[in-house]
Image 1 (cartoon, rainbow, N blue to C red):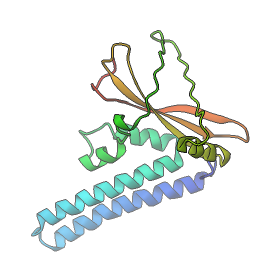
Image 2 (image 1 turned 90 degrees about the vertical axis):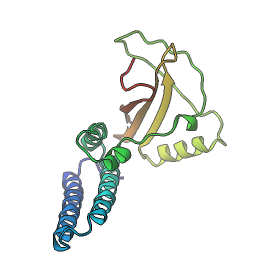
Image 3 (image 1 turned 30 degrees about the vertical axis):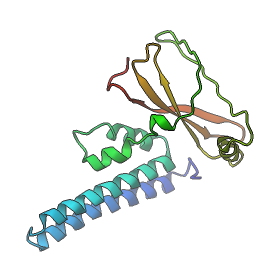
Image 4 (image 1 turned 30 degrees about the horizontal axis):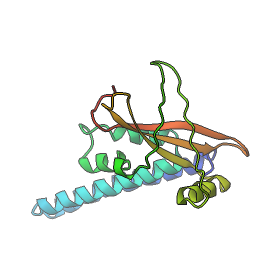
Length: 187
């Protein structure tokens, strides 16, 4: 796990990614110029591959560094008007609703109020129990995707929660992202 206080490592990792992305685009432009533009289809394919590889690199780095890089990727993942589709595909990924385990709970949260939800794995033989237990013991980041819907069933939402170890015995919890599945806007 990356030490959160090591600014020089964070900076070097980010600078290396930026240089790789920028250098890749410059290389594609150079190849296009030296071939006198004869392979437009090949150039488009090179750009598409580089877009996807760059987005995957940004995603990996952001999940490794956490914090602001994750927020930047989340914001960029919503900007289909600015970024190529390959970036949007990678930066806005979430699990499919069919992949979630069913758990029915009524949770009422008045508008503008804070809510509370608690979950537990009760069966020690459940593979999810084993994975989460290992992550807790090794003090790794835990990400939980929760699929829920509103009272009327008109909007399903996936919310990603993150639990990050911050001290010997403490964890920082946060909501990392929301995806509205049925409509673009929340209810």
